[in-house]
Image (cartoon, rainbow, N blue to C red; front, side):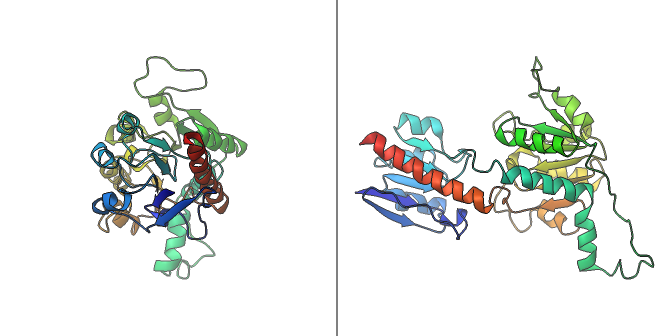
Length: 315
């Protein structure tokens, strides 16, 4: 009998369940699991299912029964992959499930920023600005066209490419950024700094690595146009949050839309979260760009498939 433990069930919407395996098994799941609870819950598991629970070398060395870590996401940053390989633990993630919903979320953010929807909507909640403006409308916040704008895409994988394709259909000019400090510029790419300088909107779709952490920082933000916007639906640590807040408050860039932060969930006093309550040019969503109904359905089915295929491979 194979023991399967799902350590952070609330990482998947309650409306969806991972299909149960066809082979004999015990399935136990927890809403969430802290670092202090992980060993006790995983010690008898042959298979662990998780999205964000940390599995470092020290922990995995104490789990001799563990054979598979099935990740309910694309990112594998929560697992020490080198240690897992050395210890004979297979790690399987899921790719491609959000190839529709994340690009659509990015497009929504583009329109929200370019048309200042955040500021105009907030006014109707927090003030009587429209009722007292004396005209049929007011234009306190900038409104600029999406068509004709230049979109700088950082990361030309599945998601970045689809964002670019949709943007071109809207009449946008799309530039794909070459790696920072690259000695050669590949066909179809534009030098890193040139994209920052030319883009009206910068959108991040690159993986989180040592070279991409804080990719957007005080230096790179200063290269952007003061009328430009930043969108991050990739990984929170791609952006230096303090530098971004400074850029927003001092007009270095025009606005930002974030679906990810460095720490998730954020602390209540996270400066960006606090700033979002007052800044009309900062939009934050709680890491939900991936979570359309169709994407989640695909995700849970692929997780189930990963588990089935792994067990078949060892029998």
